Image (cartoon, rainbow, N blue to C red; front, side):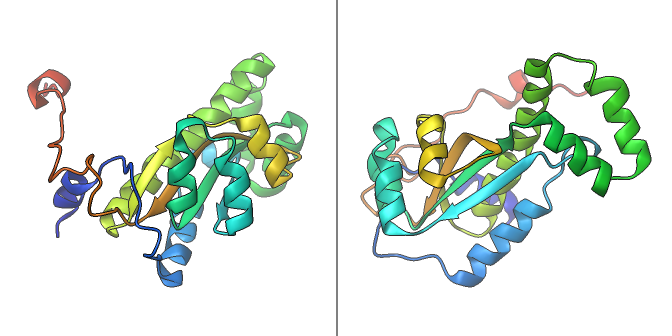
Length: 199
């Protein structure tokens, strides 16, 4: 199947078959794909937590609003977090990035307000989210991106000290009765000529 066909087949899964498990090899590949995600100046202000433990998933499900069943029935929940300690982030890039990248940060990002800097962090994490959802589609793994969760409670459950949850993604395999899948509910997108311009 081509990547285009994979994207046509992907959708936000509403109902998972809890009996179907993702092979460990595929989970490991998804972890490596996330590690390779792009970010501005290679800043990588993120952490990704793969949760398959049933007890932890149960706790997360209770603070996931309308996503309770997706969290419980999916194979794994991947939590996307950004670093919340700017000083710690600055130490990280000074130790790991070339001087040109560090100087870019100091000149263009650091002078901004704390809120703006953290918003910049957030945008890097969303780049990784796009890569992750595309990778899942290419591998035939169903996914549900979820902002409808309680981030502070996710942080407490996962004991996150220096990172803040932004969103989570449930992954697994669709239930054949899921009414949201393209075979039962065709995709609805704006006309390509309304969203793509060629100059």
